[in-house]
Image 1 (tube, rainbow, N blue to C red):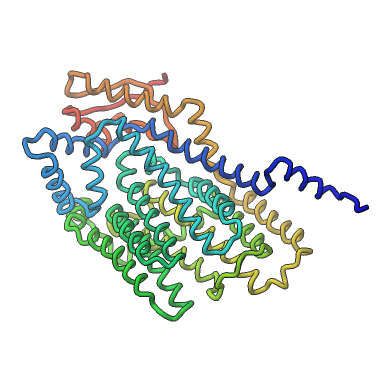
Image 2 (image 1 turned 60 degrees about the horizontal axis):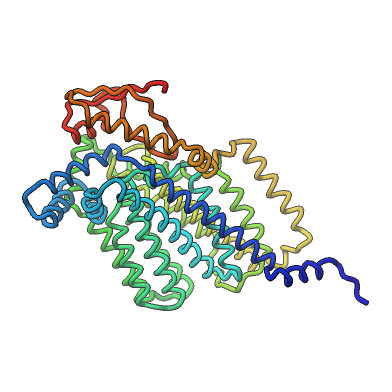
Length: 495
């Protein structure tokens, strides 16, 4: 009689319970993903009005108080903004429409945007993972999603993108439409559906009507599909070229706006040369990846992915392109996203958080994908050299590299655990309560020059009302204008 070696017993238990080890892993990963997504979305209820929000609320209030038809007045305001301030035509439409609603409604808008954005980050990742040929593509997609969320929030928090209404409308909502379009486009590419590819490109047109970095990002993605297909098949597919042309048109409408050039003239009387702007862009690109090397687990994660996937079987895909090309492409993507920002704002290495977060997020996604492809490429080209006996020694080398990285440059702060801790402890609720109380005191004060003594809690992840102890600060002047005050200052107390 054959001896039971224990594995058969475990399989029997699996059959009795009706659930396998793989299924348990998938369920655990799904639960973790869902919890993180729901918590990030739930925190939107503590979003409050801040800085630019008051300027847009004032403009929308003037529209609603005018004798003109609201729809016609809104369209005229959007056109005026396009002609005199900036070309973000889709974001302008969103802002001048939504700022007419109450804060409670805007909480739902922000929460829904965060929820859908994270969902379509996952779906976009899933389409690429399926193209890579993984048998357990849902599991690999969830793992990749968690890696992206942890590493993408590790250096720059999404505070200005998730929990600031203006930042959400200018950056996050266009990014959402871009990711919807990208996932639909990649799905159409996979099943060879021209209509879905065109539909995806039309969604990305709306993304290009947000910040110019969105136009740079999604044009780079659509152009990359054309280049990869040409390298592999030596031809340009018509529907891919048309899709790219549609996305490019959305960006052009943004770029040619007269308001962009008027705004640059207002904000900077001493313009930098094109060479200087290119240098800034390259320097920031290098700084981005250096920050990842010294402050994130991303390099170690990518090394582990390369190592593991060099041993893991996946369905056969075309791996004729050298993986170095993909890493170069990721570097170029970061550069091309920063270039319009540097061109528009004429700045040096200081980059506002709402821009930096999008760039770091996409750099995380791209670098992880390039690492996955590298592992697959190594298996296909040098599979015989990666024997199972070598795994322990190679694993030890990878762990050593990770420990050296941590010892030399530090491990960085993991923002997701910090976010969960602050949310559960009630810190975000306190920030929201303090901010609303301060706004209420300003509104009720009968003096034209308002001084508020009040405690205001702070967080790197959740925005509170932004006021300083001097009236010239931008946030102070915007809220003063909204409430018809000469000046507003906040002097923070201990409690």
